[in-house]
Length: 223
Image 1 (spheres, rainbow, N blue to C red):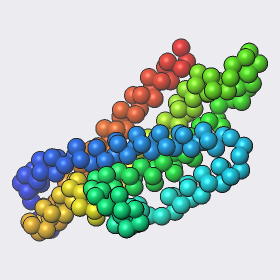
Image 2 (cartoon, rainbow, N blue to C red):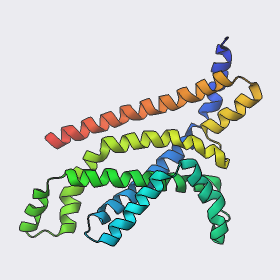
Image 3 (cartoon, rainbow, N blue to C red):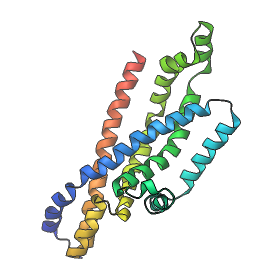
Image 4 (tube, one colour):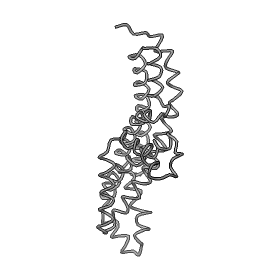
């Protein structure tokens, strides 16, 4: 098998142009998923069985359905049930789908992170007259978020790679552009090799940034 190195070099900038779209999908979806996941995890701290059962159903549902099926349900199915969504565009549908699915994982990550904070700190706060809201805002959340960072990073890496299924809705991201270029040139191996390397480089860069953040937080935490 002959690998066309000149073609690899030529196709690289064509794929590179779609990196911002992939990052936009991943970052916006992760931000929304984090907010939803944290909110549901905090609600789960309540002792109401109905609330816990509904959140448990939410987590089970969105973790159990494949990403592509969820995107199809949102983009093609929901507009049939909710006429107001008939004008939803592919990027919005993709972000909504990725956010909901990822938030189901974030609920469990934040639940474990909250449980990792010593309950004695809450008791100490209550003993000096602090409200539970003050304790969570000033004491618990900062520690829980720090403890959740490694698992959150792994989830974000998975989300970056999952954005490739957005091509099924017609979103022009890296994988979709790779399919178009490969179909035109018939150089499938070289084209998808470039796409794979681009995903890998993004993951490597993010992993390095996360390591720097974890090192900084650990230094600040132990000072």
